[in-house]
Image 1: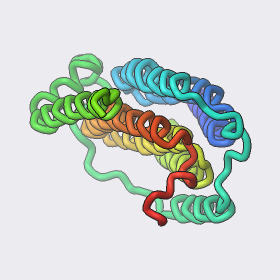
Image 2: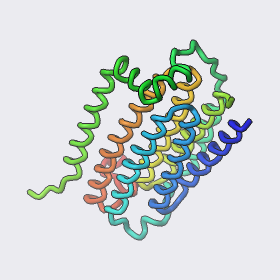
Image 3: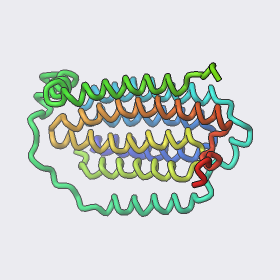
Image 4: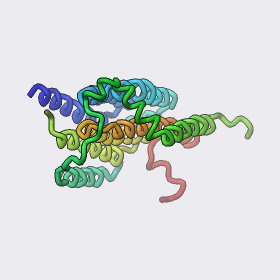
Length: 169
Length: 100
C-alpha cells in the first residue's frame, strides 16, 4: 500500500513537471524544472533497487548535461522577440499526433514476464548494486562498453571542432 | 507491490510528452530538452523491466543510453552555438537554407 502511494506521488510529480517543462517560456525555468524532474526519476530508480543508476542519473544528467544546457543558454545572446511566440505554427498537429501515439501506447496488451534472471534482490545485495552491474558490464557487455568510451571521445572532439572559433578567414 | 504496467504507462506518458514538446516548440534548445525527456521515459521502462525480470541487462542498457545522451547533448549544443553565431537565431523555422 505504502509502495503504491509513493509511486503515485512520483508519477504525478514526473508527469506534471514534464508538462511544465514543455510549456514554459523561459529556457532557464525549463532547465531548472528539468533538474527537479531528474531528481524525481532518480527517486523512482531507488524505488526499483537501482541505486547505482540513481546516482549516475543525478551526477551525469543533473550535474553535467543540465549544466551544459545552462552554459549554452547563457552563452547565446537571445533576442528579445525570441522570448515571445514560442510555439510553432503547426502545434495542433503535434498535439494530436502525441495524443494518438499515447492512446496506442496505453492500449497495448499487457506484458507477461518471461523467464526471470539470476539477479534477484538477495544476490544483488550480496554483490552490492555497483558490483553486480560491474560484473554484468565487464563480462557480457565489455565490447559495447569500449564502444561507448569511443563514442564519448568522438563527441568531445566533435564538440571542440564545431564550437571552435575560426580565426583564419 | 506496484504492478509493472504502471511503470510502463508512466514511461509511455513521459515519452509522449517529450514527443509533443519536440513537435510544438520552435526553440531549438527546448527541442533538445524534449529529446532528453523522451530518453528518460525509455529509461524508466527499461529499469522497471530490469527490476521485475531480476536481470541487470536493462540497467546496463540505461547506462549506455545515459552515455549516448551525454555525447548527443555535447554535439547538439555545439551545433546550436554554431547556428546562433552564424544565423543569429535559435528558431528552427528561421533556419531555411534548404528551402524545405
